[in-house]
Amino acid sequence: MSIIKNNIYSVLKGNFLINEDSFKNWRFILFIVGLMLLMISSSHSSDKKVMRIAELNKEIKELRAEFVDIRTTSMGLKLESTIRQKVISLELKPSEEPPQVIRVTHKKEK
Image 1 (cartoon, rainbow, N blue to C red):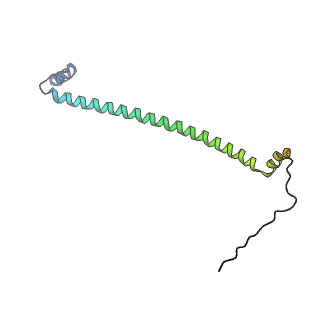
Image 2: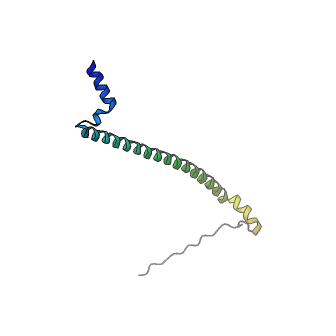
Image 3: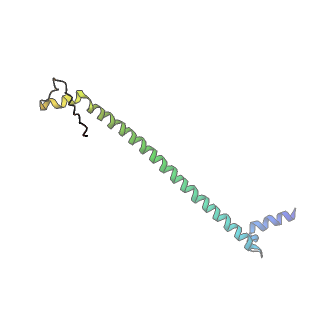
């Protein structure tokens, strides 16, 4: 039991960092610290990307709503009744006679 106590006290005092073979321990600790920094950096990067995706999705929804609104307005402006109301001030009226078709035939040259 005293061997276990001595080992625990040794770890708590940090003897494993100052022994003859402590270089091996320091390399491992630095490797673990490097991995932790890499993991934290990766986590922050993915969080930024998720936030950017959310912003872009919101912008897409707004632009889609604006597109539908403008398309509805333009469809209303194309209606014949709307055009007739706009040209009344110019005193334009629809033609009483239907349009005539003009056909041009080409003779083949020999």
